Length: 89
Image (tube, rainbow, N blue to C red; front, top):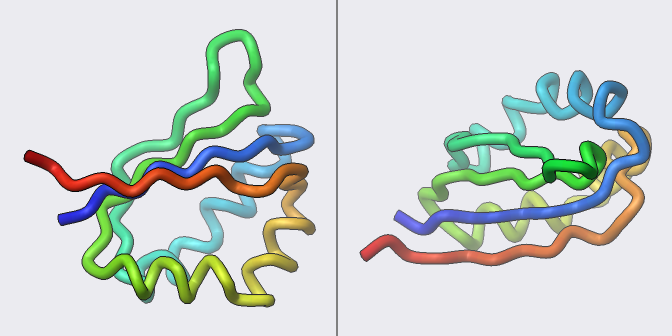
C-alpha cells in the first residue's frame, strides 16, 4: 500500500485542525487512511499529514478538486502542498 506524505504551512494550526478533522469523509472516499498528523518542532504551523492510500490516482483526483482547494484556503492553508509518495518494503 502506498504511503502519502503531504506537508504544507497553515496560518494557525488551532484554526486549521477542526476544518481538517471535519473533512474525514472526503479522505475516506478517496481511499485514504490516516496514519498521523504532525507539526514541526519549533514551527507548529508547518504540518505533515501521513496517509495510507488504496489508490494514488484517487488521492490525486481529490487533491485536484476545486472544492478541496477552496476548503484548504478557507481553513488557512498558506502554501502549496509538498507531496512525497512511497512504497513500503
